[in-house]
Length: 256
Ligand SMILES: C[S@@+](CC[C@H](N)C(=O)[O-])C[C@H]1O[C@@H](n2cnc3c(N)ncnc32)[C@H](O)[C@@H]1O
Image (cartoon, rainbow, N blue to C red; front, side, top):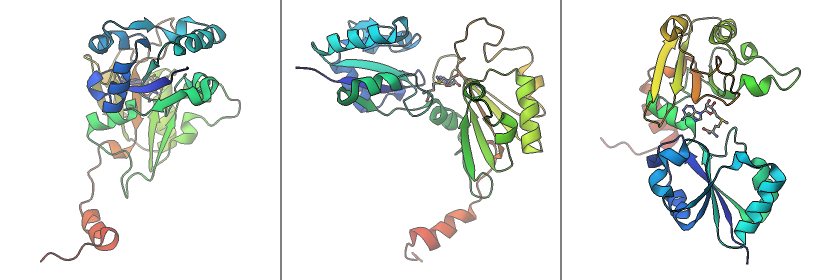
């Protein structure tokens, strides 16, 4: 009999952000594939389990090993954030087919939005949110640049930034055509969690010489920093929308 492989959205790093379903399935698995850092923050839930680092293996060896492990019991993968955006686990899920189960989790975008206490689209302020990464754009010839994606009314979520901050800010300033808020959400859900909130015109001074993106580091591993840009980061919601929705969308009877 073969068991199931669970790809559990593990959240940004804090085990408190694990869903109850993911926690239950994790408890059922003796074999767990875990990314660096999560072995530490999830230490309590992982105690006594057999741990593997998925990125240590070549793909063919890894799938052989997982299939062998699945003959003995269920296997869990702690997926950083969750599978929705920029997850390296897709090829494994595809290879395992019906044996793979994907469980959603809290992505870094959700956790950063919560820290800012802001919804990332707001009527009259932001009509669209674009999730992107200059790293993946750079891999596709003819792909739009960050300048092309930035525009009034857009909230940008920038993962895995690999551009010097001054270059990125310059492109964003051209795209937006004005000064707008920008936030660096750094190590969200981890003990060193920090949000640097500024505007395009003030962020470089505020950040100074700190390297939030590991650009000074020879490692190609992406830093745990998510960039958010756009007016929705600091805008106040217009309360008249509440009454408009009450009358026209929710259509509740008048209480008075
Ligand atoms: C390979 S992607 C994984 C994204 C993940 N699937 C998610 O939904 O959060 C890695 C990038 O996600 C962002 N990220 C992941 N975890 C983070 C955290 N704890 N704090 C801030 N940003 C994070 C950073 O932009 C990082 O470079």
